[in-house]
Image 1: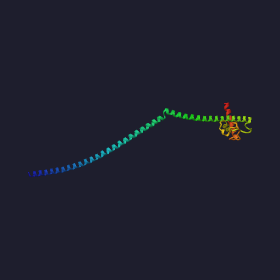
Image 2: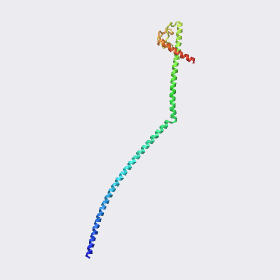
Image 3: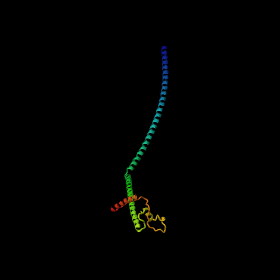
Image 4: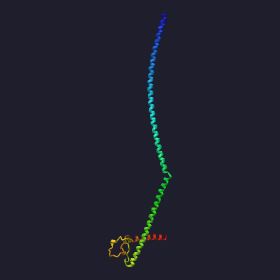
Length: 205
């Protein structure tokens, strides 16, 4: 019986030692599990924070890309509308009409200038012929001496009363001869010949 009791005591002691070591091991495991859980919570929080930051960044990038796409689309639409307006039939007709109008105006201005030059030359030629005829008549009537030449400018002054201040009231209003013309005789004769040839060409036409 004594041995049995000693064995029972030793067994109880061993069981108590095992229980104590088991409790210590369990306590250590719990502490380790708590530490691991704390680390896992921290990692999870970091991952959540990083995920939210990445999601916000992606959302901002997508919003910016969407805005730029809308701007590019509207700009392309405006350019397309402008191109369509420039290439429209009415616009092309308007541009062509303006171009043709400019060409017609240029040609008309050139023709008008040529006609004015020809008309002025013809009138000057006829006026010079009239002046020569009147001077010849005055020479025949004895109003102008022989060997003088009558100035066309002087004829204009007398005809349009521009030289009225040069005459006195008692002077006769006859065509008087001018001692000198304002242009050389050779140049006047050459211009008269050219004007005479133009006038003959018109009469022949």
